[in-house]
Amino acid sequence: MDLAFSTSEIEFRDEIRTWLNEHKPSEKWLPMDTEIGFEQHRTWEHELFESKWSVPNWPNEYGGRNCSLIEWLLFEEEYYLSRAPGRVNTNGITLLGPTLFEWGTQDQKDRFLLPMAQGKEIWAQGWSEPNTGSDLASLSTTAIKDGENYILNGQKTWCSRGAWADWIFCIVRTDPESQRHSGLSYLLVPADAPGITRRPVSRIDGEPAFAEIFFDDCQVSTENLLGGEGEGWKVAMATASSERGLNLRAPGRFLAAANQLVNLYKRLIRENRKIPPELFNKIIDGYTAAQAYRWQVFSKASSLMHGETMGAEASYMKIFWSELDVDLHATALELLAERGELLASAPDAIAEYDWMSGYLFSLSGPIYAGTNEIQRNIIAERVLGLPRK
Image (cartoon, rainbow, N blue to C red; front, side, top):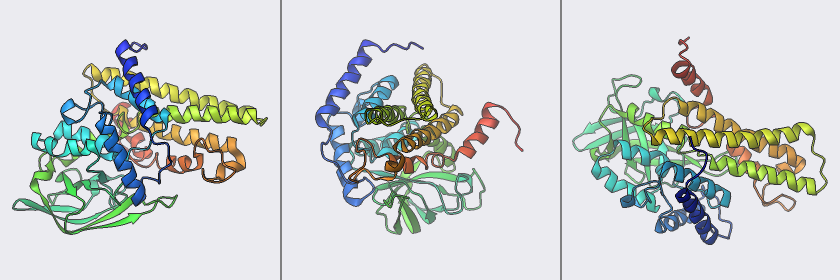
């Protein structure tokens, strides 16, 4: 791996840095998980698209720049460092999008990818069910074929962006007599289809970031089947690899947090705050870990560009970034002491970064994208070759 960026890569990085400085909103928007904030962030997706920054790693015909994986990682770094608005269509562009490129028909790509990149159609993820948790293979929502439609019955929960999204990508059981991984299919469901009821579910901070989705004889066209009937597990694993690996959590997010942590330390030193050595060491450890993750990801990206695939490595990457996120935010709260409990809007808060909100969100990292306990089982079996208990 060559650790030096090429001239074209540096020019690409400088271009997005300049664009973000000139175009990112100056005002503070409402959270994207509120109804008004959701639409504010949708308009930002469209502005990104207009300048071909919504999905720079996608082909030109779908609104991208056909940039390399290395360039996309640089884009992510600059995006997070600029503190531009969060991406409300993350589920679409980083999870479903790559899955459509791999498994979708040409008609499906032409139908869904461009509206996704434009922000016209925002996607929710409909996988978990009340009695499945991380055991996706035990799901029970059925989709029975009836002519040119599937008839859906069942319930999904913890649907990210589900309260306001336009579409939901779901894993359903098309063979009601099947068990475990067999008989599952991957279906793209319009959120306004008759027979769907959505019930917002609030996060720990009170925002309705999720939704329960109820299907009661909901009709969905067979044209919305992604992959073949019964191939849902294979298609889902393509999405899961994106969710756990490079796509959902590129290093930029953690590099930005690590830099903010160092800046917080410097500010407190200027305020004559005494920092215990053990806390200083945690800052160094967090910053070093973020840099280590960055170079590990660039190394993997280089391998992928030379024809390798993303396998079980996605599981140890997921464990690393999710635990790193918690550690960075927990260290910041220790630094802030009593001020760590304040929201960013509080008069005495240090307003550069909302560490409390970030910490509360980081606690979900070891759970979503497959719990870290499940990821450790995958590593034990598929990387280390250990036997099942």
